[in-house]
Amino acid sequence: MALLLKAVLGALVVVLIGLLAKTKNYYIAGLIPLFPTFALIAHYIVASERGIEALRTTIVFGMWSIIPYFIYLLSLWYFTAMMRLPLALGGAVVCWSLSAWVLIFFWSRFH
Image (cartoon, rainbow, N blue to C red; front, top):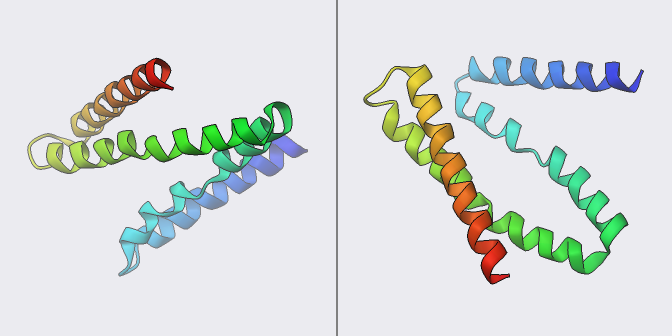
């Protein structure tokens, strides 16, 4: 039953994004996937299993993780001017992956 509820909620989010994409404020559709659903779950689990200090470290790392997402958006914006959409999306995912790897590498070294 819980799995069915999660699937229905996911479908409702997709429908909401689709509806918002058709309005004059279509850009709001880009905000909906950024609701911190998984962050809430992750933060609860980290705090429950590792304590508040680990949660605070996770929060700081989460702040730094905005950089790979920004790089994804920036590269997608750039690539869509010169590539077909599937290639632009793939290139942006590669840029996100590389920047996430760099973030993890430096975080592991200096934290």
